[in-house]
Image (tube, rainbow, N blue to C red; front, side):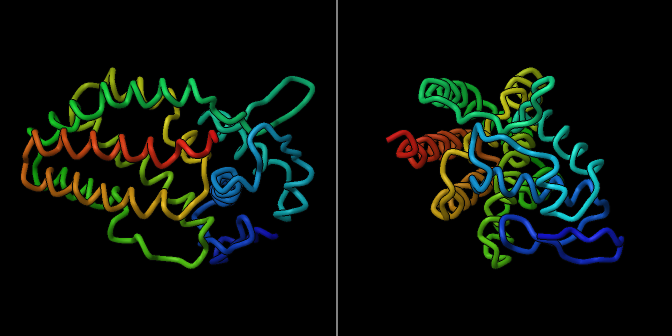
Length: 233
């Protein structure tokens, strides 16, 4: 695998597939490692060797370390003094249950508040973040999966922002909830069914209907929990 260094290069590889080049080498390296973590190509708890990534992507140590530092800040990578980097361990069943209990307590209510304050500008932001319009773009399943993991996080974060409770937003963001949950199971069903549920949430927001938004968000979170429970079997 190789990530080209020239600014006008248009593609690179991540998890065996090609991804569109962005505006910086560090961003490309970050996206490639992120995709591998989401698709479990880098297994939870496994060691991440900088030298191996340097050879894999054909880049210097600097962008690798900067990308790993960003992933460390997102809770996906851990760094131990004198040992190096490793992928964060998989969340436990107890942690999984706690995260979904918290989400069910906080997010449906926040969705209702966001719906009550909805306007055209906010709705357009949510339409873009929801990923519905681009759901079938791209042939690389690993990349599409990792892209949706990020889109899902942004979509839910924007709803929290529009609910105007910054404490709830920060609490959910601090847990890195979406990234850890998406690492549980790499499967197309996780994204396709979630996108259908996003459409239901968007319909409630489009109608500025707090009750419908609260219900749609609760259904979405409950279904997300049920989809991922088999990962613990």
